[in-house]
Length: 312
Ligand code: ADP
Image 1: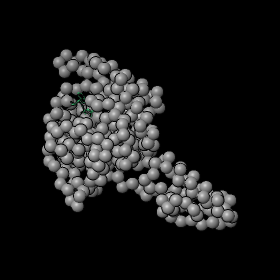
Image 2: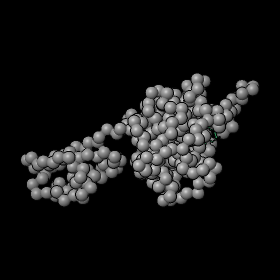
Image 3: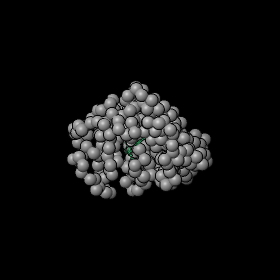
Image 4: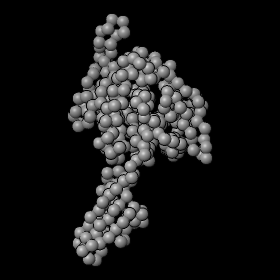
């Protein structure tokens, strides 16, 4: 058959019986769109063969050893990194072997959130993650000295981020990737390179933040990465002194937007001074035993449940 060599290398077996061509094709690592395109190319070239009147194609994919989940947001400051850290810790507490990739070139905060200043070692040019709160971590923040503004752009950022993704993740069965906020080229190429099985979008209830979240959703749709759902952060505030509940940014906006967009709503977290204080101190609340730990465990379960149908 005359097909491009990259397509040919995916053909595991082929035969023609009574004018029917049967192909078994390995589609490992391809997105839904790429799988359809591959199938269409193979079908067309098989049909072009003399004597072939019908084509049956079986696409197979070797089971991914590891589930990569992206945490994204349309803009910074919505709590994406806080969520990524605590979801990772909560999943590790459930018995998963979890790795966390801090790809937020604009503000890599995972070393601080997980309370570690250890630097990763490199072996055979591969970075070996450090471990904190039961989670393996590689962060762009570990590649530069503290407080150094990361004015990385384009190829330089992409090169550093590839190093993190291709680190020695060992037996990790889940990798959480804390994406840079926004929807630019760095995010696009990182998603295309790392091919997450799904993405979680973090948004605050405000209108502007929601417009940004919608852009992030578009980015994932464009790259054929299923959006697992939206988490609404900083939704409502309970005064620690008088107990009165208020809604500084409104609340429920993300849930309404999710419904409108046909996307799952995974849950909400209130604005909480104790969460911020613990996060700043490198003590992720998900590692503790307060109500916040239960809330993060619940969110982690919902994210993992959403991953299953997305083709884990
Ligand atoms: P992003 O990754 O979206 O830029 P961060 O996770 O770094 O956001 O959070 C920004 C700031 O908001 C941090 O100081 C963090 O501690 C704080 N923060 C995040 N979520 C909450 C929350 N639910 N309640 C209070 N403070 C929060």
